[in-house]
Amino acid sequence: MRWQILMLRYLLWRIQPQVVHVHWAGFAPAVMSAWRGPTVITAWGSDIYRAGERPAPDRLALQRSLRQADVVTCDSDDLAREIAGLAGTLRRPVDVLQWGVDVDTFAPGPPIHPIGRQLAGLGGPVVFSARNFTPLYNQDTVVRAFALARRHVPEAVLVMKFHNGLIEERDRIQALANELGIAQAVVIIDSVPYEQMADFYRVAAVTVSIPSSDATPMALLEAMACGSAPVFSDLPSLREWIVDGQNGYLVASSDVDMLALRLVDLLQKPDLRADFARRNRAIVIERGSEAASAAAMQATYRELAR
Image (cartoon, rainbow, N blue to C red; front, top):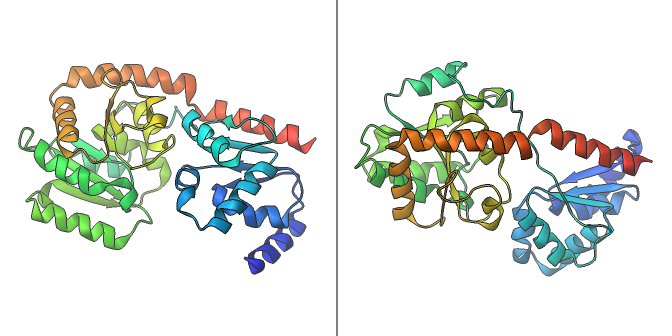
């Protein structure tokens, strides 16, 4: 930690910023030790939701940093409540700001990149598991539920994406697919440039994400913007976006049977998916656009710089 602080002091001396913005609250104690100017901390989710798992000294340092920050932001009301409960007294209420999605890039339509055309040619309706290969995201539940769903929709394909995840977790999930006899219907794609990610959602009839804890995942906003029907964890932050049965489905992250039922329901009902898509596109444009979120953050920077 001491070496990190010295390096940070040197970098900040070289850069001479007006405002320092810390992403992932767990990094804040080191930054706050090296910097005394205006500071923004943005919490991402697990840095707060799982703070109780940290050693006591680290948790206390995190609490002090949150209290000292000029502005603390996050992307859900539920996470804001967790921050306030952890930190106690803050300099001002937590700002709830979305990362925001580019609603022009992430929009419904046919795939436009080679990866999208490859996915569209898989020969059946696509379920896209949008999160990475770590235990938090419960990919084993997704695979088990998909195996059950294929009994009713045997042509369905599960697409998963590996991006800086745990190789051993990916191998475990591949082994599970082999064990369940669905390896031929499970496609794992390596990282692609971000601008091509919209094609995953355009091709996917359903996007699934069932982590054990979460704030507002970009995967949700991207799926909603592109018209892919969302099936996500039944968590307080997700209830801020999805009304179960009205514009998506919410399931417990360990409920294999319910997840399978929801997948089958959506795969067999294109009219229901279309209804969800219309509602979700309007929601994202109103509440989750990148342009609106960036403008709000820029206003905060200007206020602090003055």
